[in-house]
Length: 329
Image 1: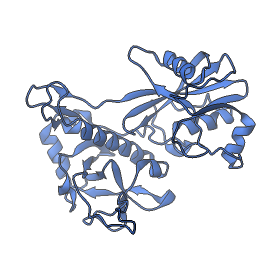
Image 2: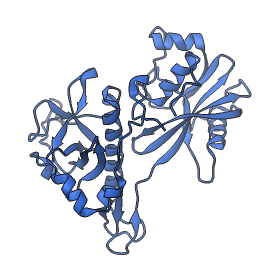
Image 3: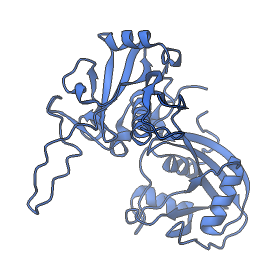
Image 4: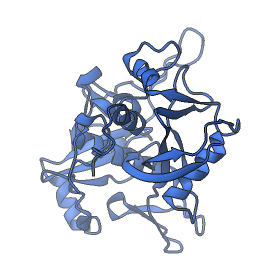
């Protein structure tokens, strides 16, 4: 598999990162890596990575391992791998409690982008969704990995086998229960996301609570004992009442919100009539190529383009340009 860059519009793509998994169980090697003067750490707070810059100029704010403020971490760092030989770590600072300043209404200001007082003033914690399309391929992969692991550790601090508190192990890629000895590993939930077409039309839907005008490809989690193809057909039938024939895999994207793997497929609809399940989605519709072009041009009266960097927009753009065969592999 060739490493790819996100100049093609897909965030969190394979950048060829050396994850150096052989070092995870070697405590001495990890200690040497942490002590390496070149080693760098990505701090996260409530799953928000530390960044600097604005707009298209946003970058991850990598810190040396001895930087002030990193001692606010409640657990050991996670070893992400080696970036061209340079050790990279992630450290969850969610235990840090920033000062809360009352706003004029008596509540508290949103501090999600407050600067940690020990870090440079041009750095802030930012929601990854909002900056993902600006990151380099390597930083995108590292940020996705760091966020997914931070979320997993935050939600799995107790053993699912006996209920005792568990401890991080294997460079952050495992949690070990000191009471019963059970090992627990990060999970990734597979999700199918489907380009369903019929002639020159594509099926789009929206979920309750989405911003006004936002539509996307239908998607859903794969169930136990289910193939990718079967999941595509089941989800489209459940959500929109459309039966699907042939299904073909297209591409994948890690989606660390909190820890999914999006498996993009194309499918051929066998019918036109939409019957939505209001428990699943709020609306679904067929859109022609011409209409979708106006969406991307920003001239559609009610609909907006999908989020930049997400696989839904990535696939739709290739369908518009008759380039579905030119997918990353």
